[in-house]
Image 1: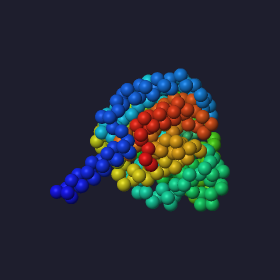
Image 2: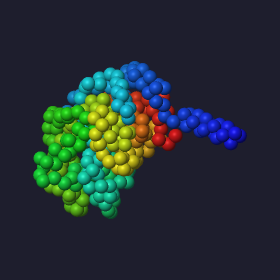
Image 3: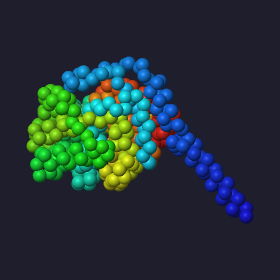
Image 4: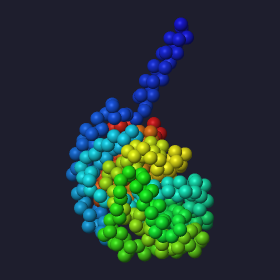
Length: 333
Ligand code: GLU
């Protein structure tokens, strides 16, 4: 009797401790109210500047601002310009890596690309030169172009189908390339061409140079809205199963590895600062989007075009940081 009582007390204590430290659920917090409040809180925040090294990005309306949360069981909450599609840019890198892993497993990423953070800007040529193994990282341009080059396909058309349908498996929607962004980036991506040539010189590009850069550029130009991005995040939160379509987008065993790369390199040179402040694996893109994942719980996405010096959307960072704080969502907690 005494033992049963002690066991019961232990269980109650354990559950209380767990509830104190675990991230909050939709049942405990009104997530719709939360996204509305956070959207309102930062609605007039106007720091940062649209990137202009891709001219079409400079022309996007800087006032656009949207936030979405999608839970691992498929509930959706959004505020602001949630239907506005913007170019996914680098966020695609964190998902195209899943396409490579689906096809060839996880070791190829270590052997043929590299997984350490470069500590240098996302388009750094020096990062390739300084590292003797030419080991880059799948979330910077060099590693992302190498990822595209590694995907096996009969020809460029089939490779594009793999890349596009992989992203669509994560959103559960039909996606379209934003033609103006694709053209603008194609007209100006000399640096990415140089990166691909340099990788090729060192035997670290695994397909035709032009094809690899073109498919990479097209992938970055795919349009998404915050709800689609949050579904992508929720798919990682849900161990690789898209919570809307219930289909597997990536094998569960690969998800911790994908999230590890996002945690260490998802926010460019500010990845350490982000992880210190927010504690969630995340990935940003120069299109103004950021996606963050609380494993087992939800994907959070925010969009606002003006970015800071590192290339991360200012308001999207603030919004996700605030949401994570209010939900006590932190993978280290
Ligand atoms: N397409 C962009 C580039 O290659 C992606 C950059 C980013 O979002 O970080 O520069």
